[in-house]
Structure formats: C-alpha cells, structure tokens
Length: 419
Image (cartoon, rainbow, N blue to C red; front, side, top):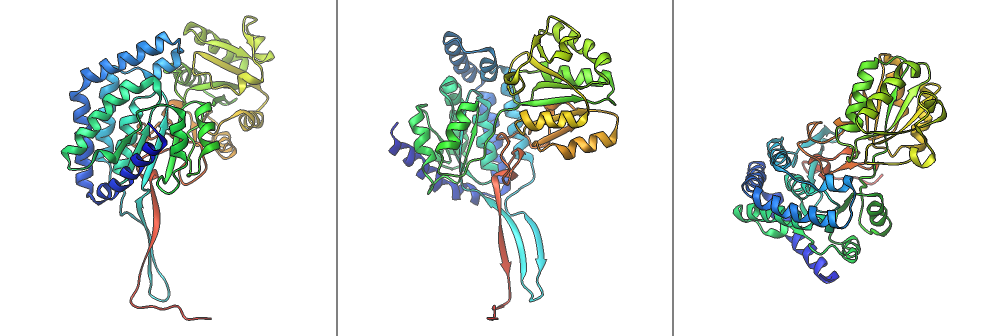
C-alpha cells in the first residue's frame, strides 16, 4: 500500500464520519450490537486466523508476553462481544450538555459534546483492540482508521470482516472503520502526516511504537504508554490483604500494562511481610529482584539495579525495594513511574490521602488491585487504551473521552457594543 492509498483511506473514512454522527443513539447502539453478534457467529474463523498468527509468532521466537496478548480463545472472543454490548448499552454521549448558564445579557451559553471526527488507532498484538476501538469510536460518532501490527494481521482481518458486515447491514460504508492492512512502518508515517484529515492518533503498544509515533506525528497524539506500576505496602497495612493484592497484581496476568512491576515495602513492616511475600511469589514462579535490604531476607534474590526499577517486565519478574517511609515510596515512584497505576495498602486513612495527593499517575488504588485500572472494570464497557498523556483524557478512555466539548450560544438578537 502506498502513502497515497493511506491518504485515500483517510479521506474515505472522513467522508463517512458524518453519516455515523447523524445516527441517533439507538441506531448506533444497534450497529455495535450487530458487530458483537457477527463476532460470536464468526468465532470459528476468528480462532483459525488467530492460530495462524500464533504459529507465526512462535516460529519467529516471540516472547510469552506478546503471545499472551495475541492469543484468542472462546472465552476471550466472548469477552470482546460482551464488551461491545456494554458499549452499546451505555448512555448517549453525543449532544450531552455538560454545562449551561445564562449571562447577564440573556445569552444562554452551553457546552455540548460532539465527535472528535477521525481517530487513527495504531496498535500492536492485541486483536481485541480492533473491535473495541472501532465500537468506542462509533459510539462517540467518530470514524476510525485501524493500523494493527503484523503479528496479528490474520486475527485483525477476521475481526474487521465482522465489523464491515455490520456496517453494511446498517447501510453505512465500510470506510467508517478503515483498516490499513499493510503493516509497513512507512504507512504509519504517512498516516501521522495527514493533519488535514486525522483529528487524533492513539498509539497503543510497546515503548518503541509509542516513541516513534510521538516523534513523527503532525497530528495530535494521546500516548498509551508503558505501565511501570507500583504497589506500596505501608506500615499500617493489613498483611493478608497486601499479599492478596500483590499476588493478583503480579501473577493474574503478568503481560498486561496494569500488572505490578515494583513492590515497595515500609521498613517497619518488612520483617513481617517480605518473607511471606517472597515465598508466595516464588511458589507462583515469580523471579524476585531486590535491594540490599530485601536480599537480607533471602540470599538467593538477584540484586535489583536501576534498569529493574524502571522496567515494564510484562513477565513473572518483580523488582522489590524496602523504603524508610511513605515519603521515600513517593520519591521512588516519582523517579521511576510511568504515570500509569499506583497502589497503596494501608489502614491509615491519612497515609492513603497523602499517597493519593502525592502521586500523579492516571489511576491510584487504595486497598484495591492494580488490575482494576481497566475500562471494563471501571464502567466504560471497554477502553481504547489507558492514556498516560495529560490532555483532555487521562486514564482509561471510553466513548466520552473520544468526544470534545464545544460552545453553543443561544440568544435573542444580542449584539456586543464597543467599549
């Protein structure tokens, strides 16, 4: 596919967007439910396509983390379909008046939600993004251009076939969900230069992809960056709860961006907590890398270096540090964190309040697993990603985050007189 083809695809998507926005909420919901139905009906062909991708990834020596993100099974396909149905059932966001006031001169000033326009989604590995990003964009009245990675090309094509079938059933053009099928990086460059056509680019994937998009884009970008997520066990923590949150955050699905990568433990509670934690982690196959204090509890622990504390392992590896107090934990997070998710375990409400106020990440969890920083778990149905860019959207992005607010001013002939 040439750069001209990418531009043509973008022009077609932009031309299709008004038809999406013109649908009422009921019709857009029906469209997204039809997509869910088609995905369920096409399960066998989607799984066959995914098996091709997995075999190719295995032959190429891709790591377990990428293969886990790539893998589909009947349960994951059903989860995609359910996510689409949840998106369809959510309240309408378009046309929502978020603020209304009457000025002294009688003007009624409203702020009203409208679509962004054309969203470019650039992502790696996760086939579910194909369906969920499309559904969220359509729910918000946008068109979308999807550029998935080469590792998931067969899975993405099979899912896109379902999306296009539902669009045609609704009388809408396939172009409302454009798909760039050639994964060559030159086409990403071409896409990122279409500032007259693309209203927002969202990269979701590894650090290399995010940096490439941010460095080359001429269009606005919201980064969905890596998750160097911390769990801090405060002096006032319940140890059983801390252990449960650690195990869930690290081992339930280590290859996702909301998994715990670093454990911070208050020195006062370390003697009671760390031996239990180390044993529980080792029993689940987790490699522990620790500071000198941590290694004092187990000489077999590998020393943790600067790179470990800055790492998004996406694997059964955990960096551990014992800190003197809450301030030291906050200083560590400020230095190594990626503005994704932080967790505090404590029974001290004042400590919890200080932790919340002292971190700047997109999500802060108090006595709850990091794994809850997810659009589906937080009531969005699904997410187009977790924004770590401090713009209009921060944290999990649902349909509302794919709209903008504009002013609508209603008057009765008022004029502004010169002063």
